[in-house]
Length: 103
View 1 (tube, one colour):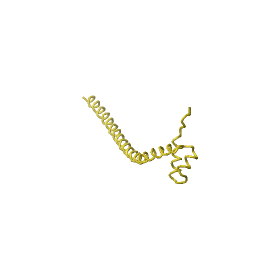
View 2 (cartoon, helix red, strand yellow):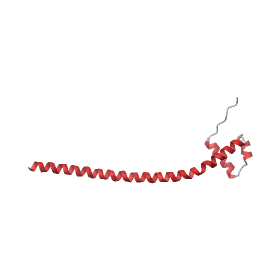
View 3 (cartoon, one colour):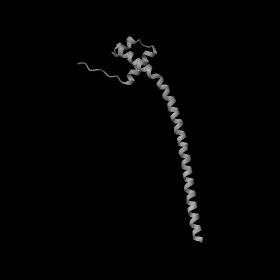
View 4 (cartoon, rainbow, N blue to C red):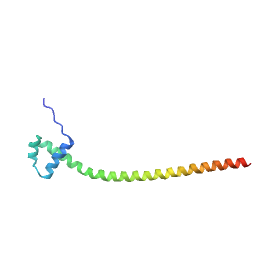
């Protein structure tokens, strides 16, 4: 019983790029890499289906980076507000304890 060969993503990309560049024909690539024409056609279909997603990822990544920056600014502002509230609380506590000692 023959076992199926598995190909890495890098290998598939290399073969697809060779075909897209026009350096070799589909038949030449199939012979060179001992790949069936249907396998090469499947790789082409998968490649073409995933190309638009590459550009969507960039837009998504940009939006995520903007959201992260926004949240970091919010955390900084809240940390500053918390620090001010702690100082105000300690000042009020020390002032009320001084007022009690004067009575």
